[in-house]
Image (cartoon, rainbow, N blue to C red):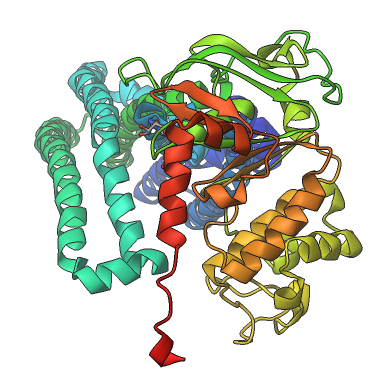
Length: 598
Ligand SMILES: Nc1ncnc2c1ncn2[C@@H]1O[C@H](COP(=O)(O)OP(=O)(O)OP(=O)(O)O)[C@@H](O)[C@H]1O
């Protein structure tokens, strides 16, 4: 998989890096031999031409030694940038492939996703490790060969000393990968606290309740926990690598003493001594590079596993092999004995809901906080599948339909609708990307939602950015841009977004008027009524007045449908709805104005 990313992202740069690596693996050996030739030529009084030739070769090799690392650094940067782009593309494609919401609520998935993001930058390290391996083999091979010519015993000693180094580095790499997984949740929690400390929305409560020290303390606590684990592995590394360094120094020192003694006894020339010194250093460096490359490659592969699991993992909800086309809604949507809980260890939210949403009618969903209204809305959009039972679109199970097609037929304003850091036009346009460039349609949707006058009056009208987090491309530094809307204005933008899907079959409005002032609510409701006439809609609201004219009102309690009927029928029945309605009506009754005040 890593190789595929490299091939897709940076084939040319990787090939060039391969050549640079080969050259930098061979160059030290060539340099050492040229040096020996120069020294021996000078020592034996050879012809000036020979000395000059070898000297010039040495100078050229020096030039290569100076330039190749810079070129290698540039190329690894280039590989890193390009491959990270491709890897991010693959990673977020696979996150986007998830059908429902459950994965993004699963801490294990989120931990893995974080490591996968880190791993997305890793193929470059894998390339470095792979070529580091090649360079190491070249260096070690060349210098071991050179050393073996002079002393086979010394060569054996050097190679033997490499075995513990190799094993220790592999064990360290495995431990490092384990620790990264272990600190993942702490680092994610730290990011949450860090985000809160930077979030303007959170800042109101943080300032008012004086939560800065509390949240900063929590953030640092998580950092310290992670640091402690990382420090432990660093210390172990220091200890082990320190020991290995001593071992290398002892072997190198012994080799050097042997060479000096042999030269003194006339068994080696000065050039030979220079090559022993270069070979000892070269073999050590080469072996280190080799071992590090293997260990780091091993560690990267362990971490890269997280990337592979996310990029190639299954989607969260089963997809029909041969999905049925989603036809315009004719009869209606049926919830048949729907049971649902968010996960096996959580309590049931829905316990056998039987409900019919007739095509062309408006159904109001009512119930106390936590009754499961929004859960039903999410099930209708197939963000989750029922744990038991089924939801049928004109008799066809939602699980057998093409999910993207199903969603194209649904318009919705969720309770927790989004305020995107985009322009006003884009904030409406995301409701239907196919219509996002059609300004007339955007204006029509905005008018219906009662937000057109507000948007029109913004400094750049529909092109005004509704964020102050960044500037747009055309208005760099212009402080007039980046307007903030009020909660109710945002809600109307979200409504306009839903209206942009003019051809939808099902309109879901989960608390669409909770932030609206009475005038706006009146206006929006009139528009809504006109809009939904003849369309299938589900309205969730605690303001019973706003759903009293729905064709049918469904009261949810204890995870089941407690009662249903028209407003008049439910009032006459004198049940939970009648009680709720009476209490709300009482709440809105104003005290009579005292006569003397008139
Ligand atoms: N993503 C989730 N994971 C786990 N539990 C959840 C999740 N969303 C909702 N719940 C739980 O499911 C129950 C029903 O929640 P739901 O949001 O459907 O209620 P609601 O009727 O829309 O409430 P409200 O009137 O407060 O909006 C609640 O007990 C809630 O804690």
